[in-house]
Length: 121
Image 1 (cartoon, rainbow, N blue to C red):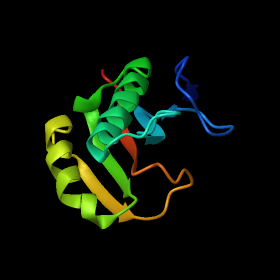
Image 2: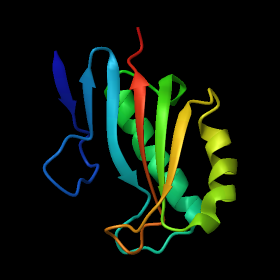
Image 3: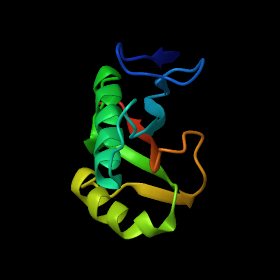
Image 4: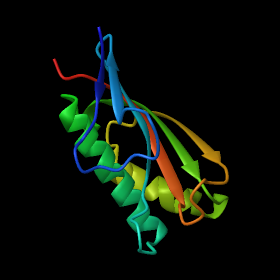
């Protein structure tokens, strides 16, 4: 069974689910760290993106501790070292990870993160 998850009050930029649960896994859509009307530092954007992911995972019956794969999209490679430091604070289970440097749809966005997690049993 496949089930879409949406968290009330959490914005989306299109017609998709915040996450989808399939076969015991939670696939979380990419989350930006931006906040409308505010310019945030890279660190604040990282923390904000992970906070959104945490809310989505909770709604799906999982948590950051159950994350098995992370994809991080950076707007600039200069953020890589800072991202690694912050990453180790939040993803203590050391999941698999891919990091990509790319441009963002929102020019204020410095980071986007998506994850795959296991549903808590």
